[in-house]
Image (cartoon, rainbow, N blue to C red):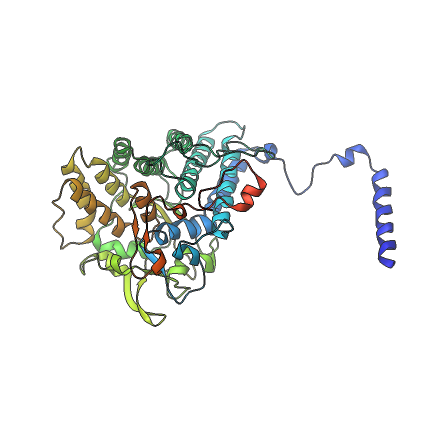
Length: 463
């Protein structure tokens, strides 16, 4: 009875205050929020928005951890130790469901970043040189994120350009319920965004910001993934032949990976997601889940470790030990897990040489070998280089890609674009070692929560 009386008094108070309010009072905008169209009114506002967009890329289920980790875990690079913190267990087993939290958070975080880029791109403010750069960065980020969404949630272009891709959203609308565009339509948008980025952006400032070279480098990866070798080669060589960046040599390879800070010297890194002593994910960072002083859940697959010769400098970032009572190979590519955390490499110059090698194959095998050997002989000074051609050379290129880009999240996508089975070692669960192509779980599930909110989004098969 007492609670009912209190509720009546509160209701009466609200009615009295409302009755005494003017219309102007009721129509005031909330003091702690701005409508989208009013959020960016100046160049300074735009810069703040750009910084927020970069921060969004650091999300746990984007480049903070999930994108690079799943790119190797769902392939044949890294596996979950029997001694683990129960993170990504269903991916190790290829047993994900529509309720998977990482898939939901990746989808949500990706579209949050896309919303931020849209607000920057659509901001109606006076164009200056800085405004052009900020918008160019937004275009580049939007293209990159749509590309990641496609690679995880949609069939490869090389299989079916008309298959369901992901929704394309280019401007803010509170009531929009978009359906999925085709894979081909999303690729068209991605390449348009990267082209806009390239036209608006200036020269490289540091590795933590997208430059015109980063836009072109990502474009090369997009073309290769799409199966357009001619365009992939052209884009890769545009960056290589600019002579803006230099490859890591074997004598500074370890030091390069030990450095947690963004670079200004144009050594190897074309674009990376920055984490430092203040802006970082702490225990949720990528390095923490690999490093044995962190969770150390994920280990190097035995068959990958066997590919490295003793003189290959890349082997120095791996070490043998015991975990969970069994022999294991530890990943030491990310060692900065306490103060200034390791940045997440998005694209490096070495990958562009490997893209140029694969894209040259079939039309100029000599050039393909040269691009491949630029990487292989640098990593292993005792190796005199590949001499193969044709199909054998393709396998050599893919082996070097597997070794060079290990623990950076590209292997799963390579196997998908090439429509190859995923043959995982005995380190993996017995039920998840031979993953055939067209197996439904080679796509992430469209989150059930998203489909509940928007019935126009079709599900992925098998979920």
